[in-house]
Length: 126
Image (cartoon, rainbow, N blue to C red):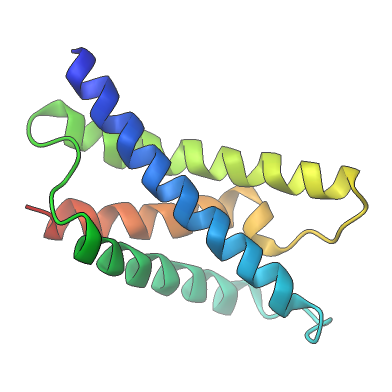
């Protein structure tokens, strides 16, 4: 049981660090584009970006952290929810500092990116 918790925590940390890097990069690119894009187009972009990040993560970590059993399914269900929550917290932190929040700082977009990331790893990791 402890092994499953540690494996899920490892996957959570991998996705959270990846999304934090994306969030930092998006904030640096946001200034030239004041008008927000269409929400549907933004959703598609976040899903594609999450899938790309998931594929790139396989180059570094080719094995799925939870190897077998319920840990893989729990990871697929719970990690994107947790990562979406972390993105909300990062957005609140940025707001308190007077900085602009991006779409990724909202639960849905953080969740969507993490879900695409997790789905790619769920299917392709060994």
